[in-house]
Image 1 (tube, rainbow, N blue to C red):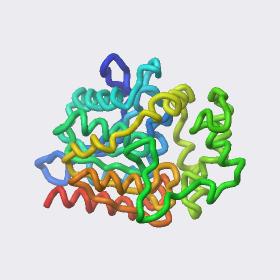
Image 2: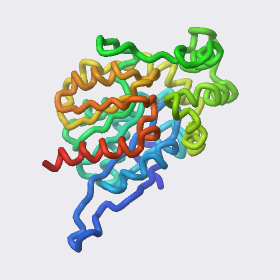
Image 3: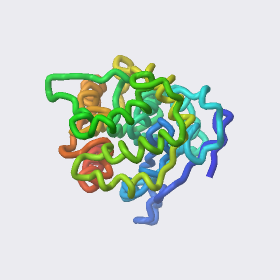
Length: 295
């Protein structure tokens, strides 16, 4: 399905009941607007892991502009702010009242901008394996996990060729290079005990190389909302993985410090996809967060 929002045709899919059939009153259930990593992936990698959210409410998956099934746009026009405004447009278009914004990785960058730019629209945020800035945070709780602690130098360099242009080469991203990176580095998105999950999780998703190139060269290096998130006052669940070298737990802890109405949960032996690695613990964590909103 497509929504016409801000001059764009944005794909969305809906899972679960919006009205509960548990009683004849058909009472409204919570709605989760789910944002995938905004670096060129689409929402597919989230589907199997998040289906249990439908136990608590209705799920609206979005392919953000420049990604997935949403119709082609000039990626040079895309910013985290514009995507935040497009999410607001989607909520208005679909008539969703007080949704929870569930966001992973760079989807969390969009969600933070959304909460800052559109206060009072969302009932709460669920920010998973994300960060408040391009610059890595550091604190005294624990050192940041590093990819080179787990992977060979060749694999680290392949990662840098894509995610840190200019560090090891000046080459332009190509489908071949991105495919190589995903094949070699993708399993390391998961903790050591869960690396074999990569194929089963990411076989459901695609990558827009043009959007990834725009992400790593233009919009990600400028991302920094460490101060602005102090404005966020809605209930926020922040989830981190102890082995996450992409968005280390120190950044999540800083978010927790700066978002006053927030809860922080760090999953041991988890990396960048806590919801897939620890599905039952993760869903239980979300359920506990939702229960607090009812109290």
